[in-house]
Image 1 (spheres, helix red, strand yellow):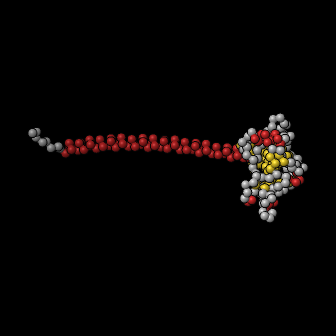
Image 2 (image 1 turned 90 degrees about the vertical axis):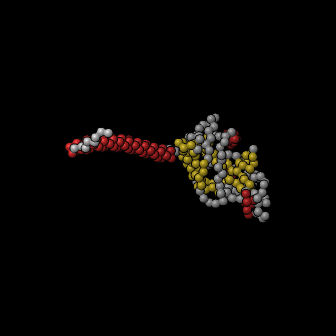
Image 3 (image 1 turned 180 degrees about the horizontal axis):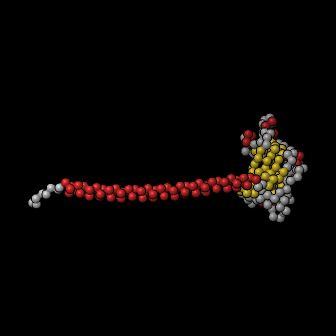
Length: 252
């Protein structure tokens, strides 16, 4: 076994200095690593913030454009003006449809105003604004109730070529999947509803509002009887039109 040679004081100091140097080198290396990682993190955060800012800018741009598109779609309109004069089954002297006596033939809504002819966009949202739309069931006043008259008359509207016939309108409606809104109620008030626009190529495109009266079996009558003749039953429904608005940039 070799003899142990204790280190002199100078040797001990030298060894400690060597170890301390290694520790300093390790610490410096660690510091550089940390600084490098912090730089990478800061760079990543900067890139992420830029991405967020760009995303926010895109969203704001799209939002602004959506607002502009919305405003444009609601301001770009075709308006057909009417005169708010009341009309009824009696005043219009309606004629029953040859194919169904419970409804009348289509007829142009009379007007004394100007500005009722327009070129509407087919397939676009179209609203009729009624200043008045009144329906009632005369059978309510009978004794017994609804024994003779169990019908109530409602209104339907379409916008179509001014020179279209009732038969042509019915033919195009039958060939389509368009729904007709039912107007009229047992109250005295205004209303607004969606109506279809029809285009018949054989006619001049000038278009106007058409109306027809339709009888329904009144639900209160509690009967399965079919609707009755439109002229003789269902009450004298009345209406008054303020305007029709066609929105070319809004799909109906």
